[in-house]
Length: 153
Image: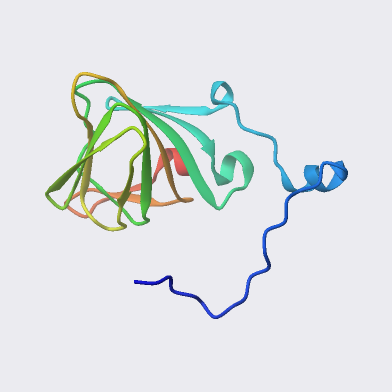
């Protein structure tokens, strides 16, 4: 199966020339250091917000989630796709009753609207980078709205 093209032509990417520092500073934003990130603590995880609308005006939210062995989040749905990229440990992702195990280097897509549970798998802590469109909302299995994902505000 080949790549699907949108019909629009895209200009090729050009490397940034170090001889033009003004151009580089106009494109590259200041990094968010993990030590400076806004941290959201729950009974099940710790999430450090690296990018979000309230932090840097981003239309995307990116957080680093950390979970200790035996921790699992509650069953819930989010109205936006989320991608979890496992950095360390093993992550069990259950979506609509089907469980997949992801290891360091794996990416897991959790589709919008599907009930999910994210948990550690095994005896090691899990660290994952999570990305989603900003301001995604959380709901519980009974349909009750729990508001915006706190690290994505």
